[in-house]
Image 1 (cartoon, rainbow, N blue to C red):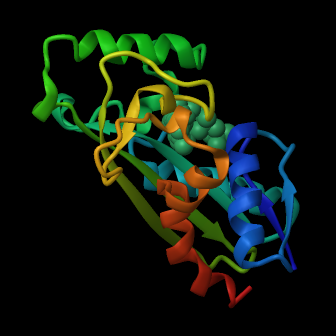
Image 2 (image 1 turned 180 degrees about the vertical axis):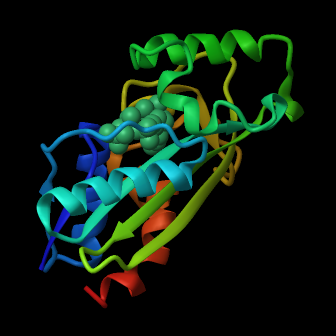
Image 3 (image 1 turned 60 degrees about the horizontal axis):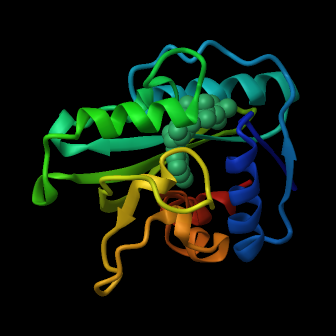
Amino acid sequence: QRVVLATHNTHKITEFQAIISATRPDLEVVGYDGPEPVEDGVSFRENALIKARAASAHTGLPSLADDSGICVDALGGAPGAFSAYWAGHAKDAAANLRLLLDQLSDISDPRRVAQFACTIALVHPSGTEHVVEGIWPGRLAVAAHGEGGFGYDPIFIPDGQAGSERTVAEWSAAEKNAASHRARAFESLVPLLSAL
Ligand code: ITT
């Protein structure tokens, strides 16, 4: 069975391929190079559905789309669905990260709570749609650390590291793919994939 992955973000594609092949090695995940729809939703759910519907309509295949981001308690949940464009429309990850650190510069530790969120939409050419979500709780570092991952990984410290303060950019890819918001959303998706 083939499934199209409706994203242009190469980091997401790499992570999805690793996560999916661990559970469903039989699924053939293909990239999507068709027209990119206007992502004008205001929530992860709306944007994930916009991307998955467009890819399924264009390819005639079942499609998966991921809309994700970082949600900061002290900013009322922002950047959230606007994470990719937080510092402007250039999708400049370094500028996004710098702006977020600046916005949090007066906020000290117990109030630096944040979470990564990932919403995955599964759209079948028949019109059947499913949406699942994964949350990864943690807090924001005061400065960027680490070279791995992408996006906000250098400033996100996941909860539950038993005294360790490593950001996700200091984790291995395998560690991240076993624990992340993307992996958690995928866990809820697994039973729905059997109907493909
Ligand atoms: P597509 O729409 O083509 O999938 P995108 O990067 O624009 O790619 P989103 O609109 O979902 O995707 O934006 C998600 C942004 O949230 C992404 O660019 C990162 O800045 C951030 N993000 C999401 N998941 C992340 C992760 O695992 N680690 C670090 N940052 C992440």
